Image (cartoon, rainbow, N blue to C red):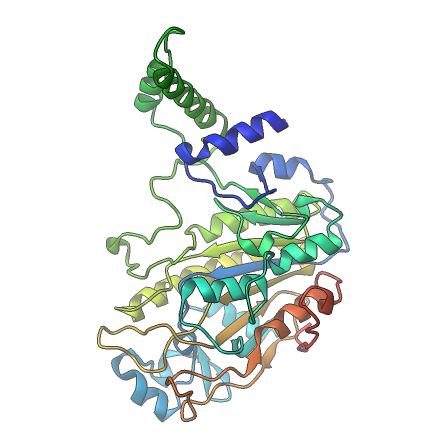
Length: 416
C-alpha cells in the first residue's frame, strides 16, 4: 500500500469500521505484514506476545485457593470446590477451563506470577489500564512501555512492535516511534449497500458543495471496503470491542478488549512463520468485567483463552523462531475477594500473570495474597510489582536493560 492510499484509508476508516491509531502509527493489512518477512522462520531473536484481558479478570477464580476455608466463606456459591479445579500445589488450582495451561504447567513451560499489581491500586478501568500500559504508577506519561522500547531499540521501524486488531494500544506508542496496527480481516459492505453507495457517490460537479462532499465520502467508503474488506474472511457483524450477546453466554463487559483472540494469534503465527522482523506483538480479549453471573461467563472466556493459547504455542513450536516465543497474559486488575449480591465480583486489585512458552522456567513466582490480611478496602494486597514482570520480559526476551525503559526500575523475577 503506498503512502497516499494508507493516509486515505486512515481518514475514511471511521466510516468503514472505526480504526483508532495513536499519532504517528501506521495501519497495515495482514498480507502487507507477511510480505515483509524473509521467508525463513529461523531467527535467533526472541519474540514477546503480550495478551491483554480487558475488563479485570477475576484472579481468585482463575488461580483458585479452593482449599482455603476463607475463600469458601468469601465467595459462597461463586466458589469452586477442591475437586472442581486443576491442582498445581500449595493449595492452589487452575480454573477447570484451563486444561491446556495445566499441561504446560506439568511440562514446566508455565510460570504463574502471583499477587501482581502496582502501588496504590485504583479501581478505575481507565486509570488501571493506563498504568499497566505505560508502566508509570506515579503519574501520567505520554508513552507506553513497549513504545519506549521501540524508541530505544526499534531503529524507527514500526514493525518491530505490532498490535493485531482495530486499534493501536497506548503501550505501543513511544515518544518518537509508534508500532504498527495490523487490521484483522475487514468489514466489507453487503453487496446491496455497496451498489447503493456506489450510485449515491455519483454526484454532479455543479451540485451543492455539501452534496459533493457526501458523494466523495461514499466513494471513499466503497474504495476502502473493496480494498480492505475481504482478506478471504467472513465480514464482521459486530465490533470486536463490544461484549457478545447474552445468548452467546458472555454477560461480561469488555472494557476495551476485542473478541477473536484465536484469529489474532493466527496472524502472529503466520508472521513468525514468514520470518517477519517483529519482536513484540500485542493481542487482546475482552469480556472480563464480570459484575454478575460470573462463574459461567468467566469459565467460558478462560476456556476460549486456553484453547487459543495452547493451539498457538503448539503451532509455533514447530519452527526455530517459534520456540523462542514467550507469551505473557495479564489484566488491568483482579476482583474483590468477596462475591457481590449478583453472583459476580467487583473491581479489585492484584491478580495472577501467566507467562508461557518454551524458554519459560515454569513454577510459582511471588507470594499468594492472603485472604485473612486484606487492605483497608477489603482488597487483596499486592505481593509482586508489575514492573518486575516487565523488567524480566525486557531483559530476557527483548534484550534490553529495563531501567532505561522503566524509569530506573530494574527488579526482576526468575521465570526466564
